Length: 459
Image 1: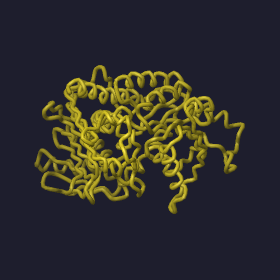
Image 2 (image 1 turned 90 degrees about the horizontal axis):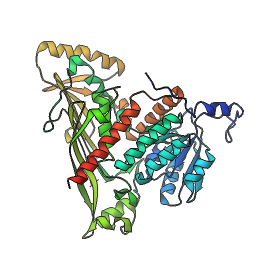
Image 3 (image 1 turned 120 degrees about the vertical axis):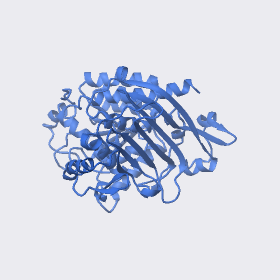
Image 4 (image 1 turned 180 degrees about the vertical axis):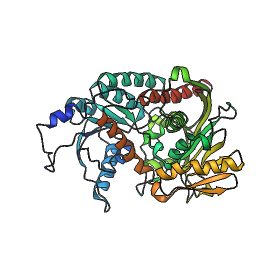
């Protein structure tokens, strides 16, 4: 069942378009969705536009303060437009000035606001956008502390009142091993029942390792200096952990509503810094010195960034552990890594991404029974997966099975942004999000911000 909402995007905008059959540029029928990109400061803003969308107008209205952030965004869009294979055809109409937010809200030249930038401002941007009757597609995290969480709750209430959709970009749902782990957990013949675990031995564990220096679209990523200020970017406890907390909810309780006041109990939380040298900071930011706002985190020339976070909590009685770690740069031939385990009564479902897996995520079914009847049951039940995902097969190993996944299903992290955007556009067309999405987004950010609060109190 879906909460019935009529979106501005495909309701009043479609009506408005009846009197305007052509777009400014191409002489084609104007498309129902039009993007407004607000203060793009993170490369994720550009990744949303790495592909074109059938229902989205090619003219994008950008509102931002002047500076390197918006320039970096525009340069990425230009590269997508001019690449040799499948070039995009975005036309960016840019307004820069100190009043960029007010200008966007006044002009309303689009109906979907894309937000990916400074997280200190993001929750306020979200609230003011939905208050103005605009749909919002926001990069994570949508809140970085308890004050932000409370404002975000108000934003969801305002979105419902104004018949618009507020949604965050959860790309990890589209990574094939995460998708299959969730689906296998729903096959009782293979997985059994999800165990409860204990705080010391959780039933669900999700960990990831990330790196400040990396390549995006084939080029070294230059991060803004504010990215290393946890007051602006948010601590690791509330940033990338939002993906992992989302996967715990999404995988353990698919399509179920989670009530954060009843279903979540925080158990422990810990924050840990990553230290960067001046030369490492310069390599990542192209800045020769630490800006004034980072001086509070500098000691003996080393910059301490609280980008690492660990938390344990229970969700509807299931004990879970989530942890995120950031390092400067991955060793040659490696990259970001992900580990995930879901413990069932018949088998554990484990994603590993280490040296043995050539640093590519691999999903395993590790059985708890060697009985012939169970082995046959797994192979028979897996036929449903094979039918849904042609080419995926089981490979018998000592402890169970490895899923052999053809490369066609591994489209890479950058491609997941288009998948999220397309799903969001489906919801806009339908006029509603699934009834569990909003309460579960609220529960997700309650979990991350509560963990940070606990960690700060325990320091």
